[in-house]
Image (cartoon, rainbow, N blue to C red; front, side, top):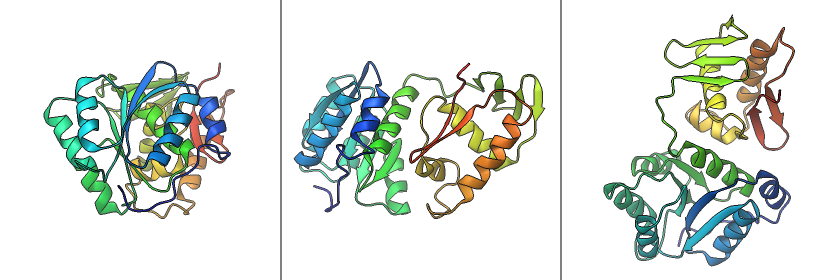
Length: 251
């Protein structure tokens, strides 16, 4: 069992309501968590979001289920009885299981996260966490499964980003972005239609180099929004209060 940590109750305002609104159809996940109370909260909230959930309470059972069944995402606690979470992930990868894995752990330092990602994890969420963020991350990983990473051009409405040439156009007009603005837009467009949290942006665009309370994200989002929306009729980049940001074409 992982180190003691307060697990967010999905019945709280940012959990149950967010889960009910998300409704991710046709997704099946495996939760490997030995804290039965935390597992019960998670499975209940995931199911309220329309997600099919299997649960394993130890590493050996989780390894068997993850190897024998097909899942869109696995949520794995790092410290488990019978076999620890990182060992489970490493063995799954050795067996050719490429299902995206989100690691949960009370060990939240940068070195801990790097170790988890190098063991084969795709994302890492420290405890305690808000269920709304856990759900958003699972949604993103679920969309990633089977989606070729070699997609070189992202499109949202009339906005187009070319990952090879680093060119950005909207309605055929060139938009000049600074390198960090380009990375920010690239990550948002990769996850178009999904809420991207501040923590996710810090991890994937800023590589943990800034304090979560910094306003660096707000400043860059504001500059990016000005560049991709100025002189255009339709806004694309939205701020989701209390959650993060989303880029989406609602035409």
